[in-house]
Image (cartoon, rainbow, N blue to C red; front, side, top):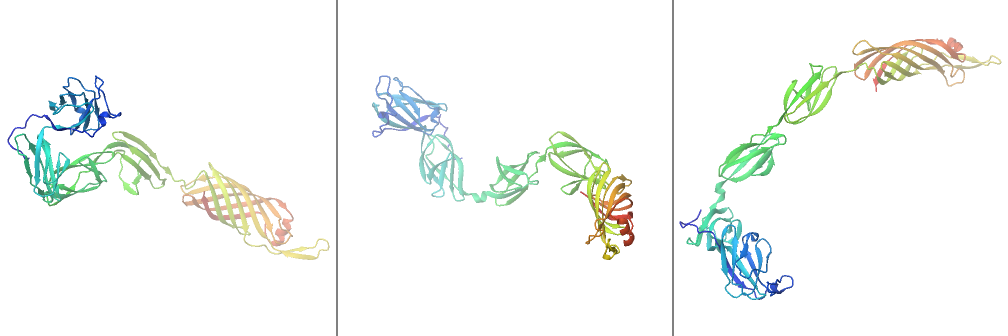
Length: 495
């Protein structure tokens, strides 16, 4: 601080300049003119001040004032009667000040007044010529400079490049009117700092958010405090010291998470694995967890995995029950499709669509015959002359009803009864479409290596109950039997 030994005088106001403005016609314009109590046009004093104009009050005129207006934060228009002699100006921080007008106040004239705290002209000279100078954060020009400064303590700053003066001066009535401002190279007073924090926390420095996870700065040497913040966490501060000319690395303390409580009940109770984002985690029945949203997957061999989402709130207890269901290799309710090979007197490929509801099974099957029968000779009915020799493909369709039994985890048995029709198919007309209707009795034995997929065998016996056409003759001549035993072996898929 630059000062002298004289005591600082009591704070007063001062009028630094007062003059008439003969070319200013505002006092006589229709917009701004005002009249005194005698009906005469009042004079207008435009008061310019560095003080908050709203805090100024005026008095001391025996004839009163014709009006007072605020024109911006640093300008007051005061309307006074002609021949006024003085004005008393008051402010909460200064002694009342009475100013006597240096000349007669004329009717309808405009005057200007510069009002400020009492002070004096002071010369400021920085050690670097042409450095910019600020007084109380207001720029006043470049060094050297002379300006009016009120009495008291003022913050003075001079800067040119990295050269800086930053200190207080005391201006006093009996003190010096010239001040030298020795500047120093600020680069020698600063150092670099790199602050890191874990967990993606925000870094706040001197009331501002400066970054996430990392903050780099060039700071004046000294002691500082930085704060790490994160949602649902308690903020934590870290102190550090910047050493001029050096790089300082700081590992800030991470914010402390807010905690809540989880009581987790699993069914079955033991052997359940818990993963979060494909990472196996350790859990207990009663846990204390950071406040957050969670998504956990619960699994156990032989059970269907369950994914559960939940939110832990600060200071609260969440109770959750997770029930895993055994994998149903042999379902009780499903729809399915199957393809199989039918081993019979005439083999074929079978296609099945079916469904099961609470164990009751209904299915429809179509079998495409793969081979053909022996040739059957046909004769003309009128003269018994040979007409043609025909061989046949034997197709089959059927509907079956059964009830599923599960006697092991992966094995199922479904006893079935059904209606089956065997049909002769030929290009020639003779015998084409002849058919035999049968009642079938059998069972489907299925093994499911994985859910939704099964390997099955269905042995069945078909009992003929009716014919269409002379199929008995065809069967005898073609070397085939009606109905009989067959078995289907294939794959089924639950839909």
